Image 1: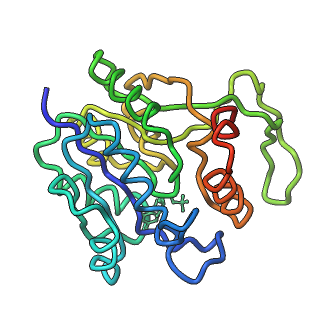
Image 2: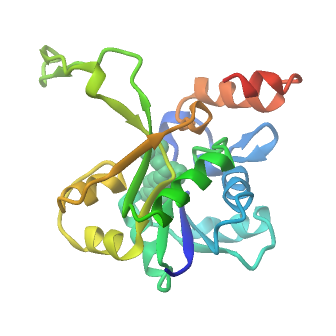
Image 3: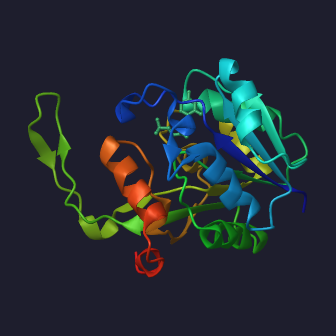
Length: 229
Ligand code: C5P
């Protein structure tokens, strides 16, 4: 069925985090997020190659901080996340399956990654981890006035890794469309996207508060704290 290749978009500037360096290079618990995210992928023992996409000027730094494994490659990302994933896909020519996994989800448990791969191998061409939404969500107009309240029971927050049959993701990226995640492009092709239970630890480190939470999780003296999240 072909190799499993993980693409790790890490070329974002991390403006919302307010850090002085790109987000994936910001340390969590003493280690750059990018290193933690790649370690999590390799720890599954189910991935044939990891391709990391970073800003052009940070390629050397990324190589230096990543494990010196023949399984890990670094390529230059793009202006938008979609451009970075496209660059990674171009470098993953022999992939049978592709996982797209944000470096910013640095604490993602290997078990979650393994479950996504298992669903792909079971024949589902598109798989995403999701969690129930805890807040009520409103839609608003440009003035900020509420225009609707979708039924929360039908909503899910989507995490990564998102897994795809490689040919399907290539077709999705070759088809004009707009989406805020990779599965969104696949949905536009009319292909069913399977959801599996996500994990709270796969949260995206986006704001300074997220960073403090991630630091606290990693430095928690009592590892049972993590087990109970
Ligand atoms: O900005 P956001 O948090 O949505 O970014 C999600 C992931 O996409 C991050 O890991 C970020 O580094 C990556 N990204 C990228 N190339 C960009 C923008 C974001 O690889 N141009």
